[in-house]
Figure 1 (cartoon, rainbow, N blue to C red):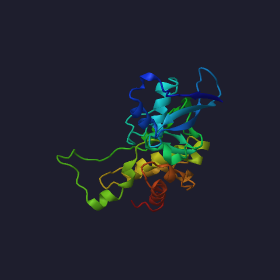
Figure 2 (cartoon, one colour):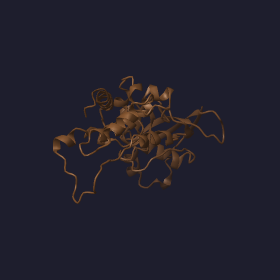
Figure 3 (cartoon, one colour):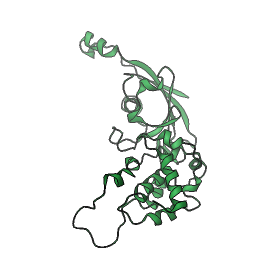
Length: 261
């Protein structure tokens, strides 16, 4: 295991001494232990430590930026909005699936090395980047769009507040894959649709405006569908949006049995 260190230094070009001391007084030295993988260099992954000075109120994503921009430019990870909306920076931080942009350093015990690695169950392409194609294929397979028949309406499709509330929770999904990649069934068998796909099917199955609920239920009635769920609640615990994923899966199972939705 190798270690890289970023030293801010105290040279004469820092600017006013008092200002520099004030700005540095709240910094801590934290160690980030990152699981590195580069198929062009080695077939095996390895851990590498990075010691940096950082404000504990900053996010893990800020630490990754600092490491990439100031220590090792080869560090590879995904991120886009950096505000918990795009879902692209899902990773395992201290053994739990989280969004790096929503995880504060002070909340994950910076007194010990903070481990960062790619999410499980999907092929690692490089460092913290995984192949999301199987995840998005499962999402596409459940028909995540409104299906209706008849002529195109000339006004919006009206829906009561009660009907909208029925599937409100599952509209919050940002497709980060944190739930799916926390599922032991998915780890062992990548053919399983996974929690995220079922959540997005739920969003339309229970939409009163949609007419393809039966079709989606038959898709999820497959051997790799909703019945593979073992109700471990890992998915609910991992969801950064607070979706009751396990509850949604159970509601889909109930709809398959009763054909009421």
